[in-house]
Image 1 (cartoon, rainbow, N blue to C red):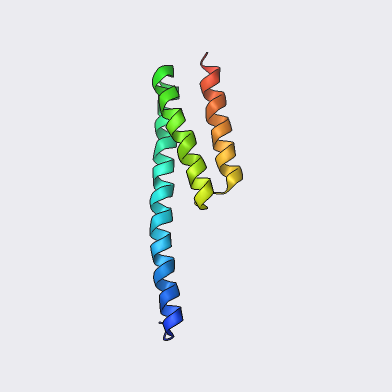
Image 2 (cartoon, rainbow, N blue to C red; image 1 turned 135 degrees about the horizontal axis):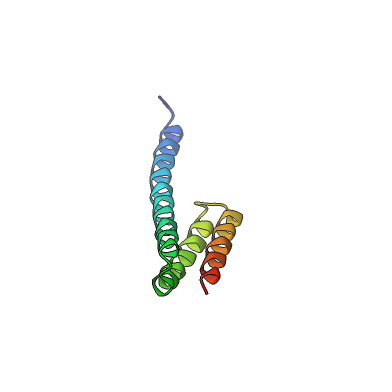
Amino acid sequence: MATHVSAVKRIKQTRKRTRIKRSHLTQVRHQIRLVRSLLAKKDKTKALEELQKTLSLLDKAAGKGVIPANAASRHKSRLTRQLNALS
């Protein structure tokens, strides 16, 4: 266990940041799964609504450093292509 005050503080900060990032990542994953399930059901109107929320969530996650920017862009592109394929 760390004995220096600064090391103890860093441990606390890391744990707090990890909890926050994990919750954001979980939220993003659930939203992506929801959109994919709606696309599988071919429910275009509902999928379009949820896709907008998902795109926003992905941008926020990338901005906060939860996921890399390229990963967010890749997810957005693939989900949008799948939605457009339903037309």
